Image (cartoon, rainbow, N blue to C red; front, side):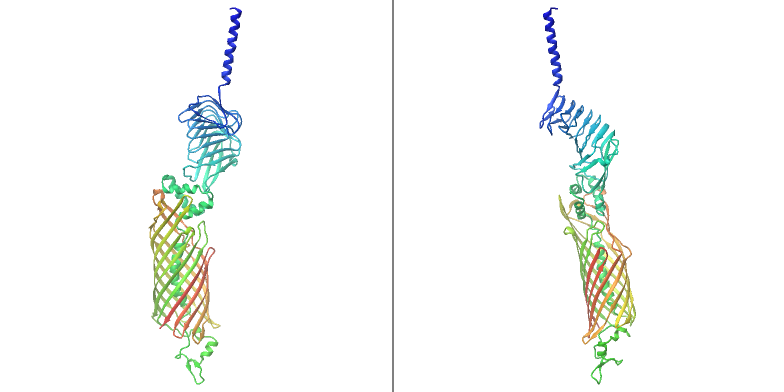
Length: 618
């Protein structure tokens, strides 16, 4: 070869080597900040995201696998969007800013990233995952893991989990987030949470690189959880139902208090108002005559001329030689009950009760107003035994939060016997009540606004035994009191309407009440020219033996079999007190007018009761 040819060959060789080196150096696609490249049409290549933050984006399209490694000039720069998959590694030099798995995708190599978004999809990383400090994973909790790692998952805390729910129903359970073969362990305290639904509490779990989250209904929900738990199961089983819409709205509420407030709006009415006020209505009818009997039939106005005769001194004197003036100035002789007057009597009355129940065991309180009246007649069977019968009507209004209310109309029929000698007495009664109930539930919170209505009936049977013993002294009557009252309440099944799938179909209910009372009454008859005045004070201790709480079994309209639920409410207080005052006027014509005020109280219940009664003896 000639020297000139040899030199030409060398020059060409150097040019070829230079071209190869140059082409090798250019085998990287640079993505500037703010630029998005789609693949396809972008061909396979190594990718370098250029500074500054946030960097550009490589979007791998559906059904396509991009071949190449992806790196960044500096940490926290660049985004990889995966609808398809990546055959290569991510973040070899520095962790990239974000991997967004829009559909289930795969990365065949390793991955290092500051943030991962996996919503209702799975991201498979086949050769290890590295998450630097303050990394964030945005997820929607689902039965399967959002990220599966073949190899080790290493994270340096804190690791922040952010919740983003598009349509899923969150339940109690353990939700896998990262499923790894090895890696960081015992670092659950380094896992932080953001944006998760407030109606749950969450416990992070970490072992051998795997990360999961345990969700439990918030303990602050208290009794409301008994209603909420079956609704969540219904919604999860029926994702297209109206109930699912409601649960998703609940999951979006900002605080546990807001969830409690919302749940109590569509919970069945198990706050105890139906049972307590049904019992109180029957109890008012019983009290009307039983309290009246405690004075004894020997208390009457001593102002008629047949009893007091005018003597030669111009004074009215009775058969015992006691003047009317002396009776009026000293003790009323009838207070000692030397004889019993048992006559026919008719009476009518009106009564009212204004009560308030405070919040209890997670259930909101309520206010109740009861009004009613009774007309009755009684007559003597023997000198000491009388019988009576009566009928009446009472209406109760129960007001709850959120403009919810109930109405109870009670139609009462009562028969009674009273054995009433001079010192002790024993009364027995049986009553029947036909109750009509009307409920209105207003359900309103962000995303939900509807009203459920219901009309249904109930039957109540009540028996009462009451007795006492009168002690006479100091011009007064001291009467220790005791009673035992039993009621049986049967409530029909009912269907609500007006609230779509939140309408309740409730089965029939049965409740029992057994209440005893022990107490003392003090009365002081005072005779005047126009009749007798009898002021009194009394105090009672009431005890509820059954402590029966409301329990509803039913299902929600539009739900499947899983919609059947059992909801239990708080029981009535076992111990209550009752104090009161009264005054009775008996005219010279045996017309009686009685006023009584009672105050009943317990730790969370208090009520004022008023009674006006008019009677006429024959």
